[in-house]
Image (cartoon, rainbow, N blue to C red; front, side):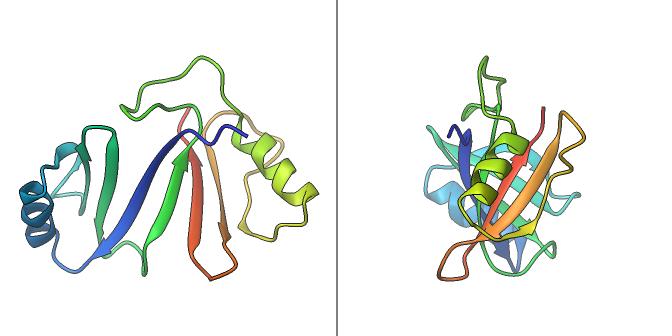
Length: 123
């Protein structure tokens, strides 16, 4: 399975303080905005998302169809194909993509320890 770009989505208490902290670790703003209450930050090929007031806990995020620069890749596994594979292997999904659609869609699941995994396709 090709899951695409990987990032960790962090639920933060104060976006400004978190931004400054990660900038001191060598990250720079790649996408998002303070006004939207989220920033995607990048250090070389490493991506983290900082989200204030959008969800509880932290999320492992995969973006099928994207590389680490949010550029489209030529060949990728559609989120609905990934969903079918997971369901065929008995993995319980928290949310599902509509199998009758194409293009952007997402699904969520939890790993055995309760960590949330988001597979979020934008193209």
